[in-house]
Length: 152
Image 1 (cartoon, helix red, strand yellow):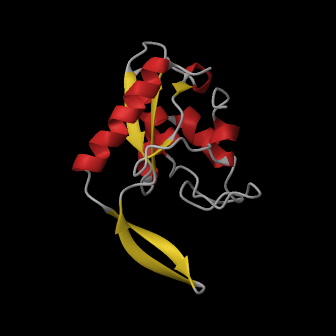
Image 2: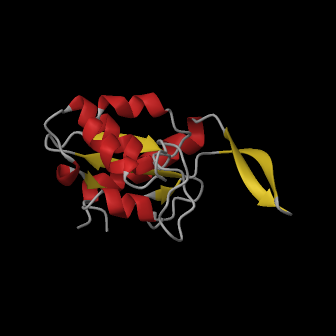
């Protein structure tokens, strides 16, 4: 279900990021080599929990220790890393080469669940993820669909 309030907040947040965010290093595969370049984060998302308070975040490099504050989210994310792996590793899910925990959705969910400890993964509602540069809607990755049952 699309939540107009969350969608408006996400579109506004993308505009804020375009205007004020410092660029981060990303890598583009070119001729079999990873070539670094500086760009805005790839996507942004907005979520809310039981209190309907809005939490905004964007995709960014993973800081593993921050997920220790939300054990239920961490354990759900760890289901999709290789055996003995950790958050930040490439997922084991087919057709998805993303790092587990790097997407905007887990970062926003983490903020929400830290602020309201009674919120569970099933209580979270998300906006459609948007490309920060263009504002276009993006499909969620396989990890986010598997971890968050409310993402369509």
